[in-house]
Length: 316
Image 1 (cartoon, rainbow, N blue to C red):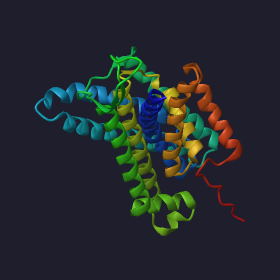
Image 2 (cartoon, helix red, strand yellow; image 1 turned 90 degrees about the horizontal axis):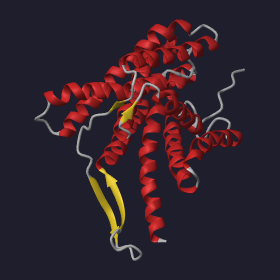
Image 3 (cartoon, rainbow, N blue to C red; image 1 turned 45 degrees about the vertical axis):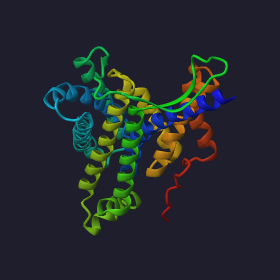
Image 4 (cartoon, rainbow, N blue to C red; image 1 turned 45 degrees about the horizontal axis):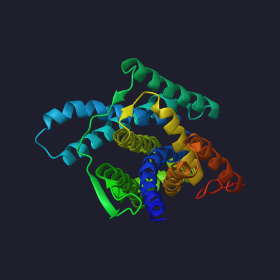
């Protein structure tokens, strides 16, 4: 009985790690949808580029910063990855999406899919094979609980937490809290919420709509890049195709939480992470994706706008 409790607690920690990554990616989807009511289907590939950017920066900066603490190297690489991927996301918005704002919605969807395929194809040309993510710091394992096992004295029951899990969860939570503060307590956040509420009236109030939208893409893509870096460190074999499945799952998380809701995206990410990890505990691992997609269908049947989503205002 005790070993089952410790096993479940261990899987809960794993679910927090997985959910943190999904939540960061889902935030990028929900931010873009909030201001433009469109789905940026290239976001999953920006997440993938975050992992490759981390790999390249680690190869360059680790020898240069050899005398610095590993935590400082990690922070520098994280900030650079977020900046690079954020600028790339804002550039895609400026070049590909902005000219299509007045076009039919299907044009923007096709363009977003095309941008994602272009990013993946170019990455595949440069990196045709999977790559290993370099280790930025020693992944120390901490034993939270250690109890003697009566059935096997040589293998005590343990509950462990790794340094990487701590970093992933803490970094993700810090970024989520910072984003929530930005959206709710700053002028930019007020402008973003105003555009989401009534995009046609906002320009009459002197708000630079294009600048706010570009900043939204920059921040959302930056969060996706950070998620890609954390994912690459947690699962240190990266490939150009990794953004497809993970990106779609993060989109599911955003829809489950309520597309357009910042806190809903966070909630959806942690729910999906928990479902994926705990589903393997109960069922065979081959059912994990089936259960994840079934979750979306069940929730949308009872909550068509997601758990924290709201029906759009009807103007008469």
